[in-house]
Image (tube, rainbow, N blue to C red; front, side, top):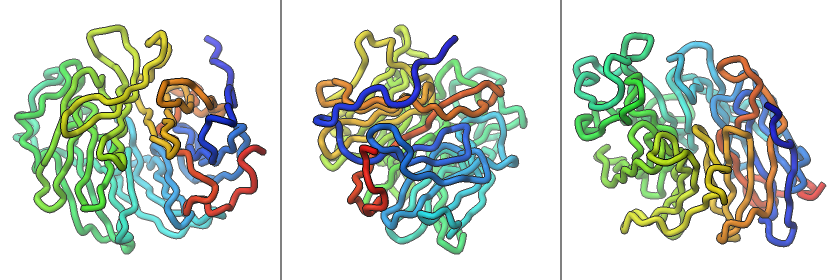
Length: 356
């Protein structure tokens, strides 16, 4: 099947949010900064295939994770090598953790937190409800999510373990999923007070971890999320997430949702018309922009696009950067993307023009 067109497909200069777009092709070894017309303004090269994505820090450095050969296999989002680069690509910091996966963040105190995997004790794995019976990981075990905080020197100063800090009996896995992990966390978002939002794909659940007690102080399960990705807190206290729409009772389609955590109501959503024309069964994310528009990453297809609050597309780009997926087939998948203003701390005017 021929893919859709690549590169820039739409740019409404009057209504699109000006800035540059940061993304890392999921099956490639580079991170790119794009201008508004789809031209590459800056790039970093990496020694390994990207684990999931990279993010720019306030000092303009790039925080990235790459996929090590060692560590748990056969699971999405695998990383293992975390690096901080300066703008010119010099490696300033490096940390290895063979279980690292999906998400990572730099904290205000200079420490770094990231998601990890470790083996769940068999007696606890047996108590996890749901999933397909007898479908353990090929390693003969169940892996569990952790959150690890390390200092710049690489010392672990805080750790959260899903199997220890959650009452596993209360969290059934999605029925048609294998029992290889509890519970496929794919996003963490720390708050200023230290608490951490987390997204569990195999639970159709997002939650808020109290960093002091390590207990879940708020959680919301909605099977219509369809094994969601991303969970970003907004200044108004709401949360955005990418509802992949997999394994729901309807024909599959994706949505981007803004959720009020107090009322648990969806206060805004984007879905395509017709709905099935927007669907990514895995990866993907969304970023609320200062203009009120939303940048969406439809990750399966490498499609990045910006919509207004009314759902009109005002900027659209499809990544032309291909790499071999887990089956060896060419793929242009993207895990997440971020729009940044040229005068933001992260960019600091280092690019000359966003309209090339």
